[in-house]
Amino acid sequence: MDIQKLYSYVRRAISDYDMIKEGDNVAVGISGGKDSLTLLYALAGLRNFYPKHFSLQAVTVSLGYKEMNFEEIYELCAKLNVPYTVIDTKIYDILNAHDNGKPFCSLCARLRRGALKNAMTELGCNRLAYAHHMDDVIETALLSLLYEGQFYCFPPVTHQDLFTVIRPMIYLPESMVKGFANKYSLPVVSNPCPYDNNSRRSDMKEMITNLHKTNTNYKKNIFHAVTLTEEWAACRYGNL
Image 1 (tube, rainbow, N blue to C red):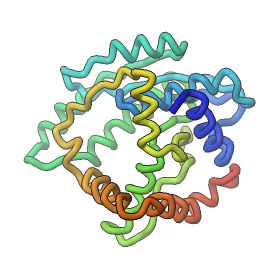
Image 2 (spheres, helix red, strand yellow):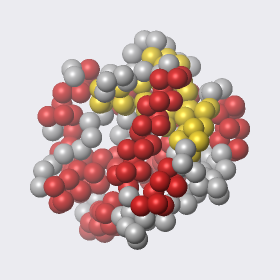
Image 3 (tube, rainbow, N blue to C red):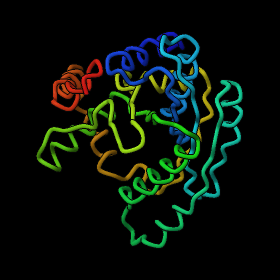
Image 4 (cartoon, rainbow, N blue to C red):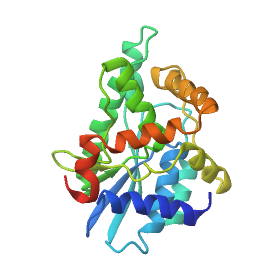
């Protein structure tokens, strides 16, 4: 996928769900993975010609893994003219103290969200952009269905107390994100979390991949069903 195609997918999602308004200061949550770096690239480019003017910040919550190095991301942000902030935390130590051989993904997520919220307040940001793509949407909906007995997925836009969460990559399949990251040699930082590939989500990803081999319409149909849910319909064209 080339840069123009990336702009097209992301711009359509932003427009369809009115994700960005005039004068917004948008923080991009940068994990160091291919998804968040692709989103950074997209928003940095769209900032130059999108009809609603907005500013951009890149923010990483460092969990405290010593092996993670963000120098190349600093260089990418300088190239894209996007201010970059790394928030140092002791989240790894907190999780390690609770470790009994089981993942603490929900606790980790809550701690990261808290650190991001504090950083956004300090930086004066009113929007937080997450890099969830189409496959994330499909996986989340099926996880909800199979483990909670309801068909639900996070909406494209979520209004919180002090800021709004947006997800501009919802129209992008993960395969396109991988292609973009490879084509543009994005400086992906490996995730050292020992539970990264050992979770319900990774199991769901494998199941969907196998289903896709037998019927290539499955993923498209599931995504379409998600867009018809009440939460998504309320977001479309800024109706929420």
